[in-house]
Amino acid sequence: MFHPTFHPVIFLPDDYEVYDFSQGYDPNRTLSCEYGIGKYNEHRPGMYQGEHFEQEQRTVHIGIDIAAPIGTNIHAFTDGIIYKQGYNALPWDYGTTIITEHIVEGKKLYALHGHLSKESLRLRKEGEAFSRGDIIATVGNKDENGGWNPHLHFQLSYKAPAVPDMPGVTSLRNRAMALQLYPDPQIVLGKLYES
Image (cartoon, rainbow, N blue to C red; front, side, top):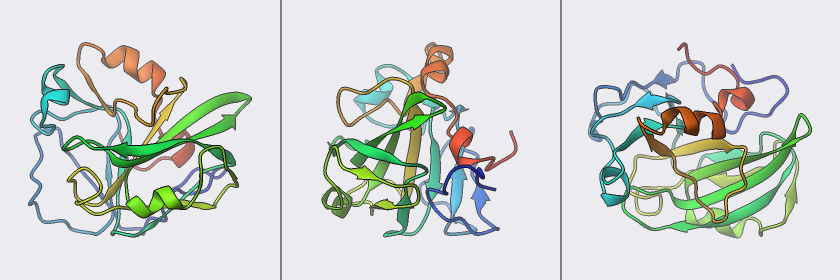
C-alpha cells in the first residue's frame, strides 16, 4: 500500500512478488509476476559482480527495487526539481540515472532513480521543476539499464550527491553509517513488504 501523502512512483498491482535475494541471485529465475519488490537493507551475497562492488565487498542493498515492464512510467512522489541526471556506464551499474531534489518535512531529500530508459534523459532538464505525480522517467531495458532485468532502483539520501550517482549497495562494515545517510524508501513509498 502506498504512502497516503505521496504519489506512487510506479503503480503496482495487488499481486506483486516480494523477492528474497539473501541466498543469492539467479538472473534466469522464473518470475511469478511482472511486478516485484527488492528489499531495503538486504544482505545479497554473490549478487553484485564487478570491481566496483567486489573490491569493497559491497553486498547490502540500500534502496528498494521495483520490477516493472520496460517502458513503465515512473512518477514523482512529491513536488521537486531534477537535481542531476546522467549515465553510469559500468557493467551492473545504474545505466541511465536521474536524481531529484525535494523538501519533505522542511528538509532537503534527494531521490535516485536508476536503471531507466535513455529516453528518460530527454524528458526534462537539470533544474526543471515538476509536480507530485508527474512522469519523470520510464523503466529501461537491459541494454541501457546496466544489464539488469527491468526495474527501478529507488533510493533516498539526506546528502546532496556531487554527481548523478549514489552507492546503491554498501559493505557490511559500512552498513550502519549507510542506513543513516540513505533512509528506507518506504518512508515515502509506504509499506511494500513485511520485514
